[in-house]
Structure formats: C-alpha cells, structure tokens
Length: 111
Image 1: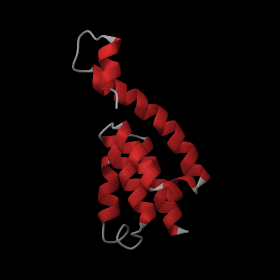
Image 2: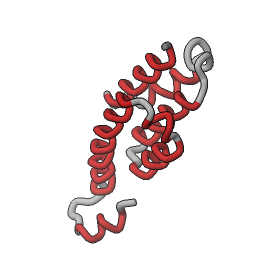
Image 3: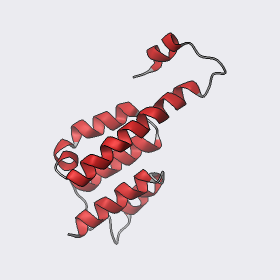
Image 4: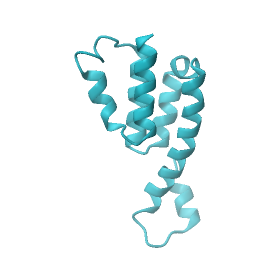
C-alpha cells in the first residue's frame, strides 16, 4: 500500500510543477531506496520529461513503463491531462526565443 501512496505523492509533485523534487524523494534513504523499483522509475522518468518540458521524453517514458503507468487508472487519467499540459509547454518552449514566428518553422521544430 505504501508504494501506491508514494507513487501518488510523486504524481502530485509533478502535477503542481515541482517535478524537480521527485528525484530527491526517490533517492532519499528513508523513503525512495526502501521502495525502489519500476513504479518509482516510471514516475522519475515522467518527472524528468516534465521538468525538461519534453514531449519526446514523456512519450518515451510512457512506452518504456507502459505496464506501470497504464495499469493504474488514476495515474493513467492524470497522465492524459499532463500530456495535454506538456504539449502546450513544449510549444511555448519552441516559441519563447522568437519575437515573431512562422507556423511552418515551428512545425519543423516540433518533435
């Protein structure tokens, strides 16, 4: 039961834009190392993709940890919402350096 609570806490950290805290929690000797496994590795990969605002890393994490992420309906539903948010952030990351953009150029930059 504790692993589910920890996984949901990490998901909450990601959802409130505190993804950088996830690695610290997972590597802490009291909590993370005790429950080390694919469930926490999946959440760490999602947090890494979110903090880098990388849709490509997010999709890779979803593929690599499909059973861990799709097997839990709560996590799966929230990751769908997170995917939409990450897609928006990815576009913002691509547009930020420019004062004016051409849609064709942005379409080329999208991975």
